[in-house]
Image (tube, rainbow, N blue to C red; front, side, top):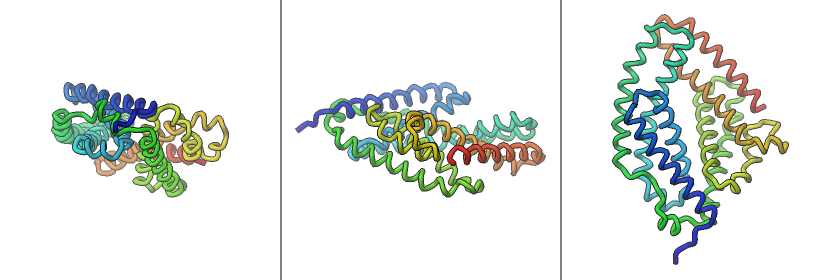
Length: 277
């Protein structure tokens, strides 16, 4: 017997399809002009959103789309290397780094972009993850979808709450800070794709992990998504500093700008600790 699609299931299927269409459009732009830094950035963001949508699919649908998901993930990793180099180049230029530091990045970017393009073409050849109407009606019903949503969102909230005590008070936990940022980004993207009615139930939990002691009041709960985005953005800037510092530590004659970047990183970390205290 065919299951009837619930309003939540219909809205989720629509949001999922939107994520797939977004990736297709940005992939086309990326392949037309891979040298454009904005295309590189937009491609990474759209792949992240599609990955979040994929994590909410029922088990059968995830299995059916596994090859496409794995291809997208491999492309995402390769493209992230290109994006990291773009960030490092931009930050070093802003710090006043000379051509001897900046120009060395060009060769690395070219090699990284070549690998990313090969994987991008592989993704283009595969069918994008979509939800045909028949498969949606058969495999996505309200109870199963709600259970999967609760499981994924709850797991991310739990991971964030576990990581926060580790990184607060110890600025040297670079990888832990990076993983915390990724968990927050995944949570935000998962919540964005949820139907609005279901998204509200996670407001208190988000305020608790993203708003520190202020998470108990109603105003914080109403602004929970904005708080999560702001905190994730600060962690992103810390990560940008970390990858730039790592690059500068291996560059000759970059001592002065290296110290500037370390100072900026310290200031951002202090801001982060204030946000979650």
